[in-house]
Length: 285
Ligand code: SAM
Image (cartoon, rainbow, N blue to C red; front, top):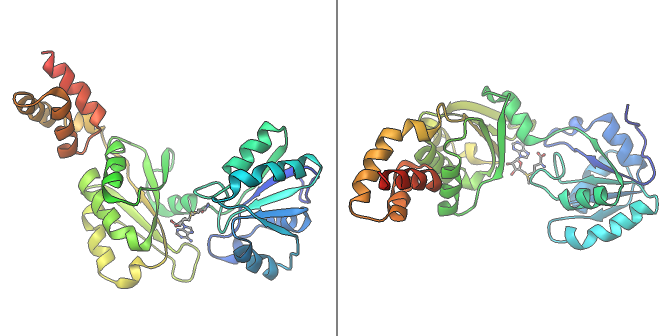
C-alpha cells in the first residue's frame, strides 16, 4: 500500500476538488502537508485551498507558460531528495491541465512518481451520464473556432465509444449546434454542469433537443461543463455507404477524386480519408 506521508525524492500527482472542498481525500491532505514543495498551476488559487486546510507548505507556480523552463529545476530538487506535490486549479493534474512535461521528465530521470487519486471532472460526468462507460474517448476541449471544431467532430463521427468533451459556458451553444449537424440529431447527450458545486445539474437529452434545453434558461449556460455524447451506433462508413456511393458517382462525373471526396466528406460529415478511399475505389471501377 502507498504511504500516507511524503517520501523523499518522490513526485506526487495530487487530485484536488472540482467543486466541493470535502472531495479532498485525507491522503491528499497528508501528502500536501508533508511534501517539501507544492508545484501549483496558480499559487494564489491553491493558496486559498491550502489555507483552509491549514497547510503551510511552500508553493511554486507551474503553468502552461512556464512548465517547459521550470521542469529542469524541479527535477534537480527531486534528485537532491526533496519531495514535490503537483496540483492544478481543480481535479487531476495533467488532464487538460499542466503536469505532463514534469511527469515525463521525472520518469526519464528515474524519479518515483505516484498518484494521489481523486476528482476528475471527465470521469465524474461520465459516471452519472447514463451512457456506456466500458469504453470511452476523452477529447478535452474541442477547438475554439467553428471550422476547426467541425473538422475535429467530423473525425469523430464514426467513433462508437462514448465521447467526453470539456466546454466553457459561453461556447456551449455553438458547440452543441456543431455536434448536432456533424454527429447527427439522434445521439444521446448528457450535459453535466457545475458538478459537486451549489448549482450542480446534469441532464440527459439528445442532440436534436439540447440547444432548446440550453436556450430555455440563461442560467443553464453558466459555469463549467462536461458533455458526454453517445458513440455512433454503426460506423458512419456503413450507415452512409449507399448515399456515399451515389453522391461520389455523381461527383466523379464532374470533378476529380480529391475534390469529390472533399465535397462528400463535408456533405455527409464523414472523414475525408474514408471518402477519399471510397472515391478512389469507385474511380478505379
Ligand atoms: N484537470 C481537471 C480535472 O481533472 O477535472 C480539468 C481541468 S480543465 C482546465 C477545466 C474544465 O473541466 C472546465 O472547463 C470544465 O469543462 C471541466 N470542469 C471542471 N470542473 C467541473 C465541474 N465542477 N463541473 C463540470 N465541469 C467541470
